[in-house]
Image (cartoon, rainbow, N blue to C red; front, side, top):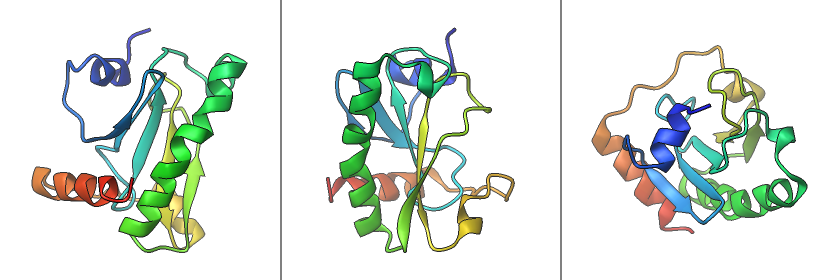
Length: 130
């Protein structure tokens, strides 16, 4: 199973990466619900997040935690919502989204259309707080 996320991990297609280590990569969602919407993806190709081996699954939130704090500082909000949906890409991933109300996590709403310059500015805004 090679997904679009696998192509990002292998650098076959570009992404606005905010953090990476040997097990995970985090980058801006190309079709964000809100400014600051980040995807956290394991580098291991696994379709469902709960099918990750226990050791990797236990590291997942530890990797995501500083990113959520950085998003919250870069984009003042009530909190950073986390969502695991997994229907759109068959590769486990966690959404980190700055939210002020429940509807901010509604994946049926219209996505933002941001320019490359806006995406890069958002990436830099998050990275400065990591």
